[in-house]
Length: 175
Image (cartoon, rainbow, N blue to C red; front, side, top):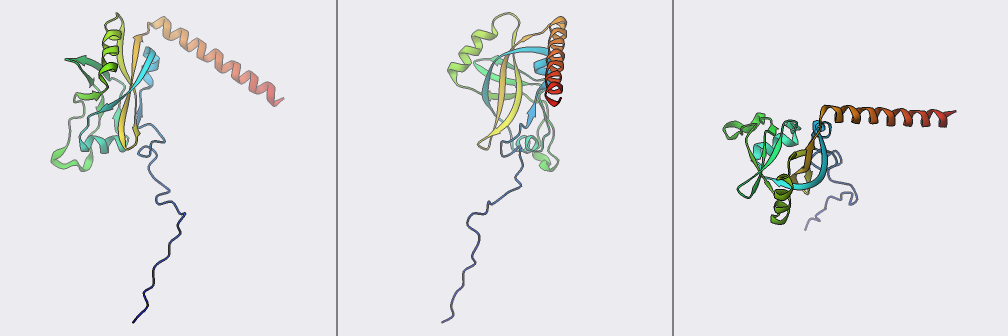
């Protein structure tokens, strides 16, 4: 009777060292920089998003854009409009429309809170980022109030003053 040998592997070696940072949740899939420039962001909340398979693959490939997107409460449901998710090259006939309306998944109590807050004048819901969490794509929605042009200039002045102060502190530490 021949003796069977078993292949010995290293038990402590990680399986996949170079995993995609977006898919593993280390980095955002997309981020809406224009939201903080155009709006005062007040309350943020996490929402699930209903996507097709080709849309998920496009988000993993980094082909999503939230710049012109906004959320809307309609018939007791939350919808994401104007969020662009580019076409996936290998989707074949089962592709998706890049600017389609997508449903956001939130709890009923959160939906009631958003309903009350968005009925106030000047408030809207803006998507700020899209990211992976436990293998699922999540969308962060912020309650936002629009900025006027003088608000934007004031924010820019404050930002440059803070930057100059940090640089002055760094220069004094070097000397």
